[in-house]
Image 1 (cartoon, rainbow, N blue to C red):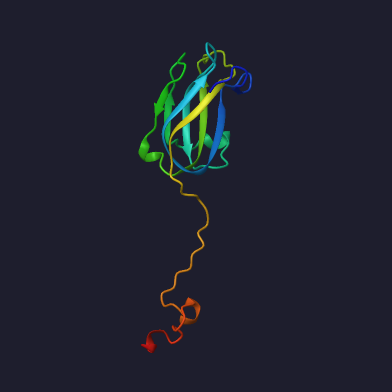
Image 2: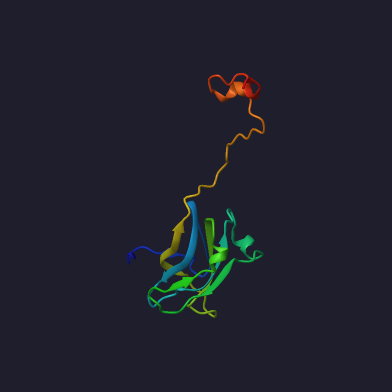
Amino acid sequence: RTRGDVALRSYEDDPELLIHVPFTVAVKISSLIIVGEPGGPAPAHVRAFVNQDGIDFSDVAGLKPVQEWDLAEGAAELEYPTLRAKFQNVSSITLHVTRNHGGEADPCATYIRYIAFKGEGTANRRGIVDAVYELRPVPKSTGVPGESLGAQGF
């Protein structure tokens, strides 16, 4: 799961990170797992935004998150439950790490080793639905033999 040589890292003197995760099908997310740097500046506070594509740091300041978590310090792998009703039919999620356990007085980079989402796929693909609805079918377009007269032919 976690490789010691791979980490997601913010800028040196800025603990904030913005992580956008798109899903190929809509999902129901039941919990979140974030593993930070062992003994280092792991994330301390995370905000989640659901189905908000294209947001950046200037946008997240004015947006209300769907849920926020205060993460435990020094924990290897904890599961943080979501508000299930708010994490239904999720096509993308954006996580905003606002601060880390490095301290407010001396800001430093945030390190994340592993992010996981637990839940289930709904198998519903988002996209344009191309459907034709007919109130009164046109007999010629049905393709059924002998139906050329429609209801009048019985």
